Length: 208
Image (cartoon, rainbow, N blue to C red; front, top):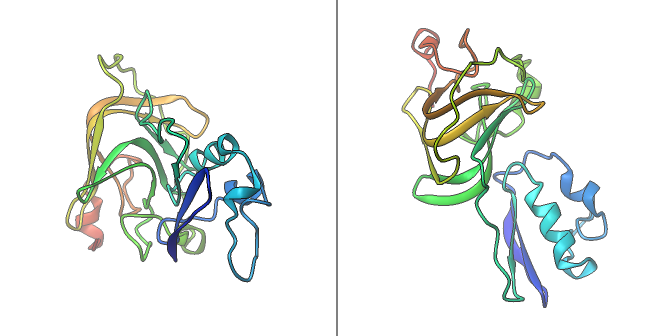
């Protein structure tokens, strides 16, 4: 399910392919994002532009997007590119993400290896019993000269996610694991050095 719901001041887009049901939208304002509605469930006219933008930008998967019509700026790339490690769950990326030739600002990428919607998370980690800490050991790294800019994300064939660009990898509670301009992050679910790849995808025959 995908599409754009229009209103006078703001249009709201939804991509079912990217949604991980974090429920930030329906909890943020159930009048705008109506839970369990049988038909149209997005009603942009039910709240202020600012509130809708705040809810949309809190959607970690990027499933909720918007186009504002009041002449003010659209969604901006963040000041700091981050990958947040979800406990027993996906990689939540907030950056100027360049993936498959398209640019977006938010995405949740599979790291359990079981998603049917790779490289995106589809919630399969909940069923597969995937276990991976969101609080791995921290590295002693120097600050980057620049912390934003394009972040190229490449799902390598049958291998890890290659990330190229200024990047801070952070724990679920916000502590910095690593600061880097190039990282290979596990997406087979079996690395002994999560979130980083250790080559185990070759031994387990990961396909993706």
